[in-house]
Amino acid sequence: MAHATLLSNGRIVDGTPRPGWVGDLLIEGDHITALAPHGQIAPTALARARASEHFTEVDCTGRVIAPGFIDVHTHDDAAVLDAPTMLPKLSQGITTVIVGNCGISLAPVVTDTPLAPLSLLGRLQFRHASMADYARAVDAAQPAVNVAALMGHTALRMHHLADLRQTATADERAAMAADMEEAMAAGALGLSSGIFYSEAYAADVEELVAVASVAARHGGVYATHIRDELAGILPALQEAALTARQSGLPLVISHHKCAGPANWGRTRETLPLIDQLAQQQEIAMDVYPYTAGSTVLREDLVDGIIDILITGSQPHPEMAGRYLADIAREWGVPQQEAAVRLKPGGACYFQMREDDVERVIAHPLSMIGSDGLPHDERPHPRLWGAFPRVLACYWRDKGLLQLEVAVHKMTGLSAQRFRLGGRGLLQTGHVADVVVFDPARVRDLATFEHPQQFSEGIEQVWVNGVLSYTATQRATGARAGRFVRRQGGSQAAAPQRESAEIAIK
Image (tube, rainbow, N blue to C red; front, top):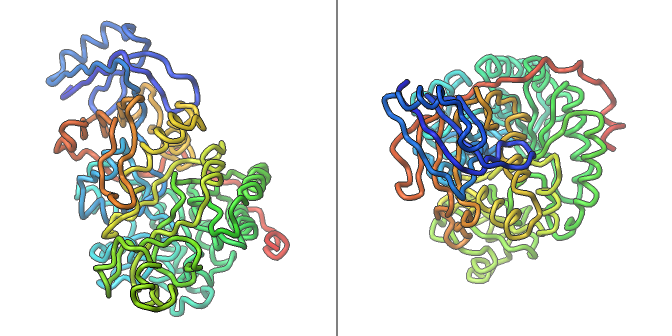
């Protein structure tokens, strides 16, 4: 055995909602080999570990020992290749990132000039013609975190469609389905879509089902940035549920929110609808712990009411970090015109209300995702702070969640929903992705003014059994991540065909 680590006398929060307990955890190689109340690991197991070439014991008194956090909603597709130390994520205790969200993935698009929204992934890594190519690139880059991937529907459209303003033809649907088949064979988790974006807005349920049903045959999932998170949110949720039912897939609603002042408070409507739909099919959702979202700069999202912070602008890079209203005032133009002048670019939109965010975070079907954009010049603080923020704000300060439930939403629930078998739980035989944190001190420090800040209280992080981050040393230099293929998915139930007109009206 090359190396072994004993984490002793910590509060074991195992990734389930069960109450934590004081115990010891033994890591040998890249797996957890023993877990027991403090002082009760078998002497033979301890002797074997101590005989390894490198043995370390870590006193975790007063600390929490938890599974490494799983960021279920990222746009780290290129970041894991360009910046494989992955400090924004590793420093939060994140050991696995799920990429390819919102219909946006690197594969199968090969281009030097990616258009929005693919440009959210940067501009340098669009050279992976298949999911297998991308998986090989991840393993070659040896990132510090594990990478699991969805195939993006918008990427498939941009690769195969002659006219993005139209619904895919039968031949184009077949071509997208063939790429989806390749992706699932390469270990993809499933399909993501982003029909909110104009490049995929023309897609109808039939087009989506043609691709998603391929993922269903392999036990995948369907994650979607729904068509409308503003006034039309209820029919958009119905459409997403219909697509998943007709495909035979579990549904993950991406970054569930009620956006725009006219929509505030409507989680009182959306969450009961999601509960009702979940009685017929498997549904989950992810959420980030902030009242601002972040995406490409779009003038149709400028309403003159909400604050909009520019995160980057190609024609006016000097405006990054400034508010759109101030720029418009300085230029003497309406805010929408200023937005057009700043494009292409990105922005944070302060379009949610805190009580809605709290309802979604507290809901039993929600998981935590950061949705950070690592290629923004001044990224949303969620890139560096989302997971510690949940612990500091919604567990410790507000008491909205129990600690075990908060951790469950970052680990065990996430692994279950996305078919990441052998991860997300502290359990003998599971992969040793582990975080140790100080429950009294853990908190996010990243702000909208200073977004690239390390969090406090994340003390050690092990990825595949390798100590990869410490609070004092930061990155240890170890990069033990790997491309993680889908595990634990079962053959999907037969798709349920029904009338789209009836279901979503």
